[in-house]
Length: 118
Image 1: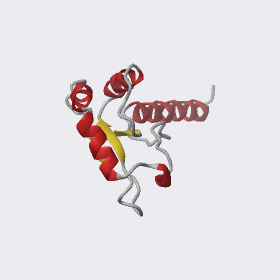
Image 2 (image 1 turned 45 degrees about the vertical axis):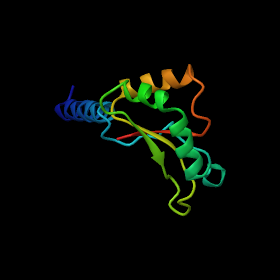
Image 3 (image 1 turned 60 degrees about the vertical axis):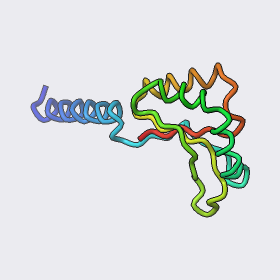
C-alpha cells in the first residue's frame, strides 16, 4: 500500500474518532427531542405557577433524581412573556432518562413540560 493512502486512512480514522468523542461528550449540537407546543398554545405564567404549587411533592420527587435537576417556570417565547411551561433542567443523560421514566408513570402537572439540558 502506498504511504499517502495509509496517511489518508489514518486521518479519516482520527477525524471519525474525534467526531464520535465530541458527540458523546455533548460538544457538538444535535437536534433535540425536547420540544414544546407553539407559543400561542402554551398556558399563562399564572397557570404554570399554580400547577407547580399544586404539585410540590412531584417537583421534589423530580429534583431528587439528581443533583443538577431543577424544576421551574420556563418562558420559551421571547415575543410573549405571558406564555409559559414547566421547564426541567438537567445535566446528564442519566438524569434525563430518570426524569422521562418518572414522568411516564406519573400524571404530570396538567401543563406542558419542557426538558432542557444545561
